Length: 381
Image 1 (cartoon, rainbow, N blue to C red):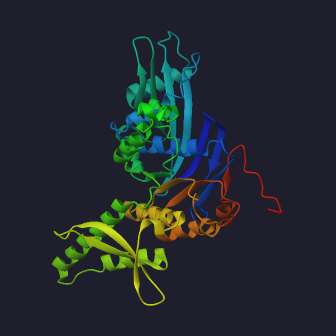
Image 2: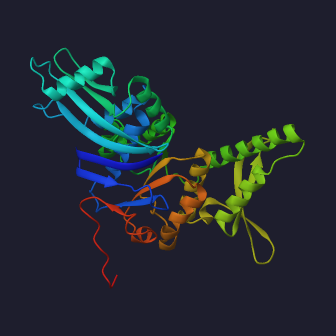
Image 3: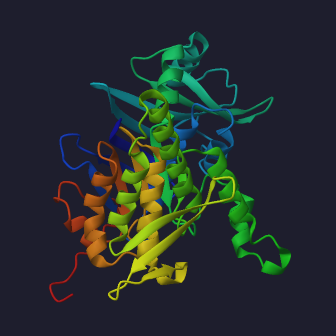
């Protein structure tokens, strides 16, 4: 999967957005920049929610939350929310997400009449969710796919949803959450509602497989990755009589990531992995046990991202990452481009960022901007 183009006529701060992500460019890493308030995070969340949630009834609630702030004007019948072009298996698939507001007018417009006809015949268009539905007025979100009909659209959206991922800081305000949960951030803590947002994020992560926040170390992800490696090694033993090298390989990868530190696995009495530990070999030959306080914020961030990418086993995916540079040293901001390609090659990465160092790791053609554009660094900075 490769996101080729996204067009958003108008949504919150976004207006007349039209960005292309050229398939021929390598690496497939595209920084997306603007000044604060330009809508970078909004754009990533809009893309993610439309592509990750449109195939699932369980995830419709996140589309509804997002669309409650994208109501169609009272004098309008149709609103194009976004057009998204995807390159898949040698073909370009053009998706158009349309909000349809039908007030049961006696003489609908030609475009509305055509859409209603296509909906009734299940041609080229699939209803994604109902935003509202009353006796006198109905508003729905539809996905129009050029060149596909009926079940073809459903199958494509299902495949696409498993290939789209979003990572963002846990302090981000997510538009696909309930509005009341987000508003709780501005309430006094004595009301015990200010933590609703944290519970809402945890709930969303459990229901949206592609959603991740940059948590400290993501120990559960690390343990799960090693448990998978153990299972693969044991399977190889049953088939060949020799244990595999998956666990040793994963340990080597983590040790390489940690530079001067080493990872250790701690099983419980039954042999199940329940903890991890980190050690440092000192100059005098002694081994020092390390705690979380012995890691920098940047080290924990890289460890978290690496663990998430490895655990998801991403292949041919569209990976949207918001403010990936936070906590990273400028050298690591520059290096993160190569890190992503090395950790999981073959994916497309779109990185909403303020980092000039990150942008300078790629050609100018890779860097995409939306208004208001990033100010150029002065020669004296």
